[in-house]
Amino acid sequence: MITLILRDEHERRVIATLMDALRDEWGFASSFGLDDLLNRWAAFVNDVEKGYSLMLEDYTQELAIRDSVEDLKEKLPERLRSEVEGLLQPLDQRFRFLTRTTKEPLLPVELPVKFWWYRLPNALHGDLLEAALAEHLI
Image (cartoon, rainbow, N blue to C red; front, side):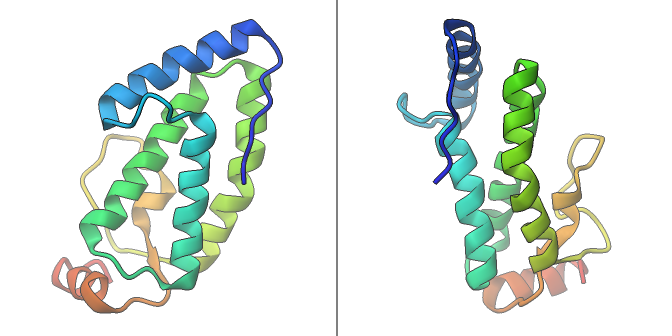
């Protein structure tokens, strides 16, 4: 379970402002915080490790959320940015290990395209496998 420790009121205000915008964009509950966002990425990586069984649309939605994490991270004060990077690094390494490179990004996304848009689970099956083959991703 990921828990960030906010040191002062400035950090709390910055996080609150950034998360308000993100909650509006994604329709998350008002209680959904940065910790929840980071834990969602961690849970997704765990799902990929166990054998992701949902559809390509669900998979790419999680990748879009990872984009949001990255965008939010870049707007954080330096100390928090470093802390979030330190939390994301092992998750991203695991994700790379658990996935394989695709020929094209899974969806057309804004430049620069992040590495996760070129990754599918090593163990593909079901709807995700069918979609990857149909889209000529592998």
